[in-house]
Amino acid sequence: MENEPIQLARTFARLAGELVQKPSVEETLEGITASAAREIAGTDFAGVSLLHKGGRFTTEAATAPLVREIDDIQYATRQGPCVDAIWERGIFAIDDMAHEQRWPEFVGKVRGLGVESMVSFQLATPRGTLGGLNLYAKKAGAFDTQSRDMGDVLADHAAIALFSARKVWDLQQGMHTRQRIGEATGILMERFKVDDRQAFMLLSKASQDLNTKLRDLAQELVYTGVLPDSGIPPRADGQA
Image (cartoon, rainbow, N blue to C red; front, top):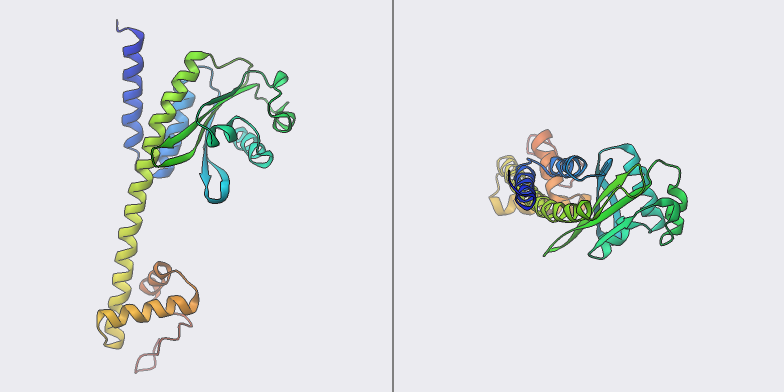
């Protein structure tokens, strides 16, 4: 029989491998919450909150609708373990909703919803904070020291997996955008008998005139063959 530290190491190695193999950001987030609910003792529900520009939070994955309800209360009141965990590295927990005093407005609105304890961990990489991992329990005192330590380690692995998934998605989007712009430029080159530089300038001018992102305009041209109200002169045969 392997001792407990080795078993835990193998568990986290397996979880890390599962998470980094997820094919999309959405599936990575779902994998994080599913792993937390399955592996962290005491957890009844789990969710991932993401931090956006301007300090806005959203819940992007949750194992139950109740998670989103409680998270929304945290976001609205700007109080609770999740909010503090996102802004400050550490483990923030409520052992018993009935006796919690640090976040009075949040706790006052959450009491009676069916969650009696919770714990939150920051999701962060050296590049910055991504959000928070939140675990919820139906009973008070559900998260002991081992549960909190495991949650903290899982959050570190989850942050790396999420960061990697986002990078892959960004690269895929960039490749897709370049491909669409290239295709749209080719259409304009053929239609107006211009070179690639002139065609790209036509597309860029239409983007500015219509106040539309270049990638969106290029995609519309590729899909429909039309640049609506763009100011681009029509073909000699009178077609768009």
